[in-house]
Structures are given as structure tokens and as C-alpha cells.
Image (cartoon, rainbow, N blue to C red; front, side):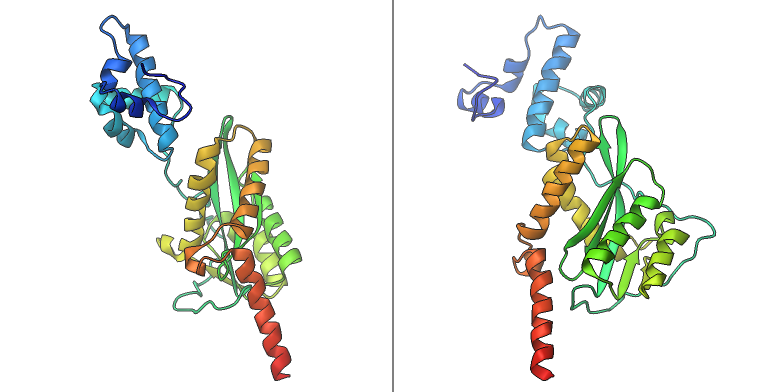
Length: 280
């Protein structure tokens, strides 16, 4: 007999072991339309527990043996508030009249921490609506230096993240952003210029210029946001704090020869200090 709350086996696996079709388990001829929708929703939720990154098209392909249509799956997921899990569109948009700066990273070798920092903004969906996350990353080590979340799209939370990163980690040689209004604002630019930081901006229609930050957003969302389903700003703040600590100090990165960002960031400074002492 299939046990819906089995601690180890999913309904799909139990049906396969017992040689029972899932359609036979989920449906009965006398079911009403609402009951059938609930049965389909149960199958959808089961699939999403295993693959939380599936949108309605992939969910439908996974459960179409139940005799459901693509349109039916889309309707039920929409009604239940289940969204397709994919990278959001850019949260930062250009503003007319703001200054533009050239892209400085083309063919540039990045070989030191604090040589180049980069930033971007992404959406995160909560129960009451979307909030916005900005993070500043050292491109050499992939270390997250600072971050802020906000329920508005003004420049203030970006400036706050920038000032914190500089106060804790020092001054980078180059700071790279897109041409979003938050990063071209007078408040943000003035902080960079005050510290003598060279400003680099991604060109128009050059989404890949900031590819390392885009990859970071993907890791954050697939490894934490989509799995945890945070409901409030307080939950999100606590969850992000835990994830960024994990990302910096515990998560191994293939691109860093399976070292952590903290290890790479700190060890390079030690190596440089040892070198300077040796040649002085």
C-alpha cells in the first residue's frame, strides 16, 4: 500500500516498486474536478520537492503520465502560487542623464584580491512581494565582501554596502558595475571617486561582462533561496547571513582549485607580504 508520508520513499518510487501506475494512485473515476486538481497539485509538489528548480513545462513532462495537460499544470501552479524557478531579469536599469564609464576589464588579468570588485542587484520573492539584494564581490577570490537587502530600488542600500566593504576590506583598484541607475547615481559614484577607485561599467547589451556575479546569483538561488522559501524579510536576512558565511568559508569552488573564497583571499595577501619582506 502506498504511504503518502513515507519517511524515505516518494510516492513515485513506491508506485514503481508496487508496479502501480501513478494515475491509478492519484485518480478515481468518481473524483470531482476540484478533487482532481488537488490530486494534480499533490503530484506537482512531490516533483518540486525533488527538483525545486522546475518550471511548469518541466513539471508537466515529469507528471504527464497522469493524463494531465500542460495548460492544466500551468493553471494549477499559478493558482497555488508556484512560480518557474529561473534567473530574474536585471533589477538595475539605466537612468537618463547619469554618467557612463568605459568597461575596463576586457583582456585584463585578475591576479590579486582587491584588484577588481564587482556588484549587481537581484530580485528575491517573498510572501508579501519582491525585495532587492545587492552584493559586492572580490572577483579574484569570489569572496562576498558585503551585502544589503531593501524593499525599495533607491541607491541608498547600494551605497551602504559599498561603504561597509571599503571600511572592512580596504580599497579596490577597479570597481565594475552595470549601468543601473543605483550605480551611476551621484551618491554611489562620489564614494568611488573619493577613494580614487577606477570605475568600470558593462557596455550596453553586454550581459556577460558581469558573468561572475551572475553565476553567484545562480548559486545563491539554487543552493539556498529556492530551497528555503523564505517568507519574511527577517527570515531572509538570517538565511542570507548563514549562506554567505557558508559560501565564503566552507563552500569549495572548482574555479579556485576547490579552495574557499576566504582561504584564497587571505592567503594571497600573506604571500604578497612574504614576498615584500623577502625583497626588501
